[in-house]
Amino acid sequence: MITALELGLIYAIVALGVYLTFRILNFPDLTVDGSFTSGAATAAILIVNGVDPFLASGAAFVVGTLAGLVTGLLHTKGNINGLLAGILTMIGLYSINLRIMGGANIPLLGEDTTISLLRQFAGSGWSSVLVLVAVALVFKIIIDWFLHTDAGLALQATGDNEQMIRSFAVSTDRMKITGLMLSNGLVGLAGAVVAQHQGFADIGMGIGLILVGLASVIVGQAIFGTRVVIQATMAVVLGAVIYRLAIQLALNAGLNPNDMKLMSAILVIAALLLPQWDGFRKFAARRRRGRSALHAAAEATLTEDANINGKRVS
Amino acid sequence: MLNVTNVSKTFFPGTVNERKALIDVNLRLSPGDFVTVIGSNGAGKSTVLNTVAGRISQDEGVVALDGRDVSKLKEHQRAAQVGRVFQDPMAGTSPNLTIEENLSLADKRGRRRGLGLGVNRAKRERFAEALKVLELGLEDRLKTKVGLLSGGQRQALSLLMATFSQPKILLLDEHTAALDPQRAELVTRLTRKVVEEQGLTTLMVTHNMVQALEVGNRLIMMHEGRIILDVSEEEKSKLTPEDLLAEFGKIKGAALDDKTLLQ
Ligand SMILES: Nc1ncnc2c1ncn2[C@@H]1O[C@H](COP(=O)(O)OP(=O)(O)OP(=O)(O)O)[C@@H](O)[C@H]1O
Ligand SMILES: [Mg+2]
Image 1 (cartoon, protein in one colour):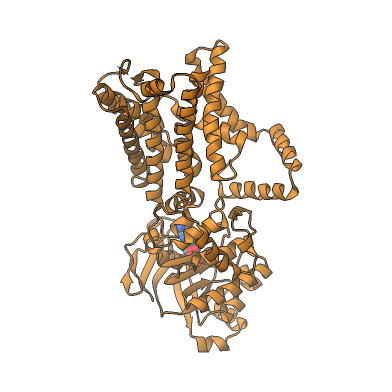
Image 2: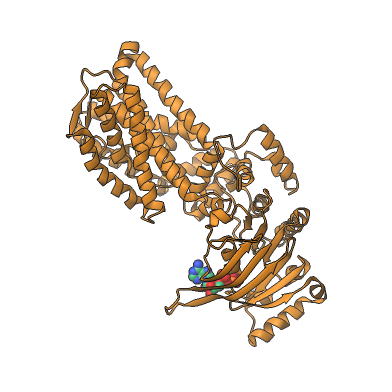
């Protein structure tokens, strides 16, 4: 249980990264499957070579941003479809990650890691969970702040109405690259911390990560809402924790860890299909009618707009 | 202020779909000129505006803004000096951002967008002050998402945003066409007001003959990719919508398109 909570809080950083691309930029970025492992590999190889684990984790962030940069350049300057650009980087990173690690696996047992320092400092009970809560919240608040700066608003507008923000002298290419770099930096950092938490880096640890991120974002936002940015990011963090707890429950119920990829896929499919199902829509409408009429009208306009623009089906 | 010299543009050249959208177009606007642009559907009006803004790159010719050749600049690079309002009220604003955030985006046009807060108290006061000009009460709804506004409200806001940081040239493409008559009237009034106050050099496309004659100090008519009529302020004041329709008829020699007749 505590392990699941801890992992959920670490994966919240992945979810924040995926939120930036998938929700803010409207860009389903598959690079994360590769950049997560790149972050883990980078941190692991540095740590076994005696580098300070915090510095090693910082390096993982930087390597992640580079992966995002490649995808961003392929998409914007190379005019390659976004999904394909992400897949290309992801596949290429597989070989690069093997090169970084010099093998398929690097054990970190006995090394000084950020997590071993956490254990020294806060043990392995609730106090270490609290530390990780604080860490996740710090990242959430940084993202909240960034999205409200001039640069962050331009990033939001790039995902919202690209033509419009270009007519206000913003290079949407540059904004997309920035978003992808930031997102993959966060994912790389999370990969580094996950490796330190589980005690090894592994070439396969990023496989299917995009689904973990998407599930966290979609489930969290379905439950906790997306009205304003600070609410949306909180929902994403909580979504990551809930996802991890759900996985833990499934494991406790006797499912095999290898079944988890299928579970994630089914969860995301359900989250995407459910809102299209008539019964669910009626239910949502009834819930909406319960609130004030004005509120409902406002929401109706929003969905209408979302349809017209063909984006943001939140 | 704006110099369009020998500009031509052909879409899908060398195919069965070839369309000569602009044929050797020349247009010269002095600072403060407010030019209305009329012409039938497909005449090339939007294409002229798009080549000035850089959304479409011309095949031949030069576009110069304020004496500087901008032909090679990308749309977002030219946008520092070009304000635009589109026909679609959805097009000029960011629906998921609030009114004040949209204004903040407009406010930073052509300046570095760094890590300062997009909206702070001082800016909020300034934005509220600017919104009062619209007389729509939007100054009391700064934190409302723009997606919740009506088409007319959004278009008025788009106009304010397009002119917020004093562009060198303002491009309006049938920006009142999608609004009901009252809202269209309001947005037209606001347009005249802001163009006059800031002395903006403006190109305004319209299908409304009356509006084309009432507004601005010059009128041009386009047909099949060419400017076929250029009327100065003095001549314009003597023209009637009927004269314009007759002019259309003369050129086309055939029936006018419905949209024009209906005006
Ligand atoms: N992006 C484009 N791709 C291909 N053809 C285009 C494009 N934009 C315009 N055209 C063609 O160029 C010609 C001129 O179009 P334009 O949109 O400039 O006309 P317009 O005068 O604005 O007409 P309307 O009054 O209908 O808006 C038309 O034949 C149109 O089909
Ligand atoms: Mg047009």
